[in-house]
Length: 104
Image 1 (cartoon, one colour):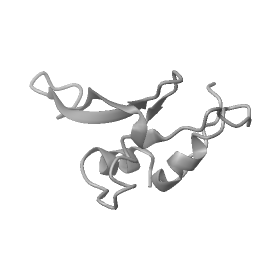
Image 2: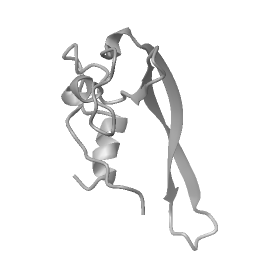
Image 3: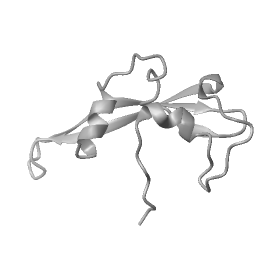
Image 4: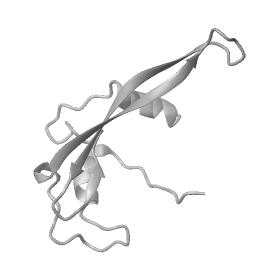
């Protein structure tokens, strides 16, 4: 069983990346806005129709994930954070789908 991963609001990400998993402070401090932005597209797939029905189809939709790759080698997923720091983030598309999957 994988270890428990604590969840927190996207607005806290910039503060949280200042610490390593062992609780020690990152040196030098991490400025996520200065890190290179990377993107990856994954696909969220559902079966359209009953599993037993031969006419049922798998329907997939793209889901954009965003990451920041920093000079110190740290890579952080920032999908939900992108836009939070400038006030434009809204819960649409993939972010809304994530909350559905999490049972929120």
